[in-house]
Image 1 (cartoon, rainbow, N blue to C red):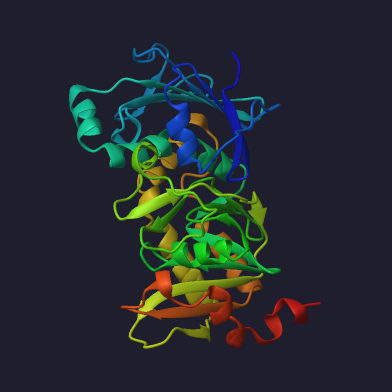
Image 2 (tube, rainbow, N blue to C red):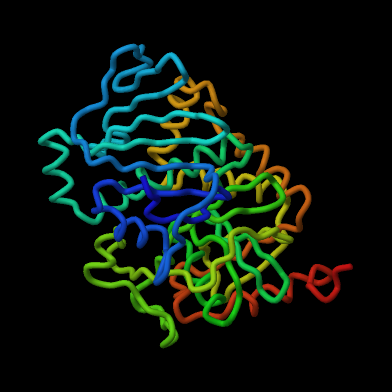
Length: 353
């Protein structure tokens, strides 16, 4: 079996084997990949096998854990319709690597829902087939998911946290268009010092001005990867696999006329990072999955230690809060690099030893 394509995501080397020949395009869009993709990888950490077989996996020799989940004698875990997607998966750990075999076995109701809600289903499909395996194996390897954006602005690496809708993606994109480097727009994993980005497309407001050299994924391409209405998706041009933050900035909306940046106590910054991660829509189905995989495979924690990693980040890095007005349009507002310097002082790149 020849590998279809490979990528590095969430700090994991992932190889996708698509026996069906029908998922490559949509999953590559969902991974934010554009143009050429890597072919083959020696000893990947995660092997994803998309099987052409549409019959359910054999449950013989498996014991039930909970409804729709069974454990095998060797630590294999069998899950029916992961996250209500219609995809049945067999997860197994061998020789310090994870293999996830997937079959499309929807019920009639699941098939109808997938056809009626194509964009929502495309997002769910990408999570189940690609992102969740990489995220779970990262947890097994002592990394923790965080809902953050991380960007390197001329040597100042900012970890930008905030709930969905506060404007983190737009601020990140404006910096990337100006020449900054980033590792994640939405989700990353961290050990408390380094953040490894989850490979996803940039999801930007449709009216955000984009340079001519930045191609937007629209129409069929956007639909294939699950673009959110009112947004466009674009592939990362120069995403770096990981960055080491030297500053934490939490983003919020408030009753201010102009953007304001103030120092933030570490405990409050930690609360923002933990709460933003736990309520992230992209992870709603992931947390129950980690629990049943913990029981079935005997690997990893039932609950990722988000609190501990957030505490390490906020205890060792300067923390600030950036407040934008409720009606402030990030799409046309100031650059993040222009908002931060007044609050940085001795934390500016030139002043650090």
